[in-house]
Image 1 (cartoon, rainbow, N blue to C red):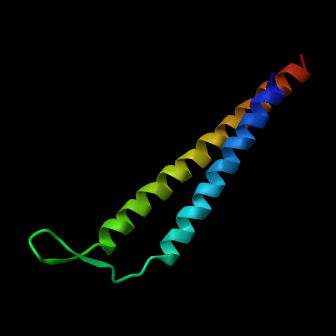
Image 2 (image 1 turned 120 degrees about the vertical axis):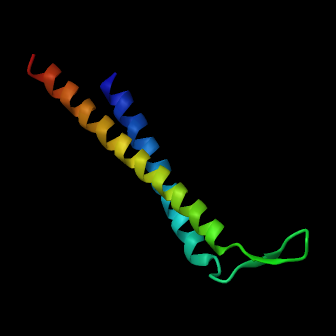
Length: 85
């Protein structure tokens, strides 16, 4: 039972790490002076919106890392309790 949970937690951790790498690579690949023309013909800078979105995504990934770490600590605690019973 504990081994299956640990393997699942490791799998989720790997997915989060890949997500973090993808977000970091997208952040470095995007130009800093990205603009577009809206429906009324005004030229608008999209760099701030994209940066805010990437910051939000990275915050979510960091929260996921924290949850995985807490899950692994709790799993290890239950494993130690069962070993010393």
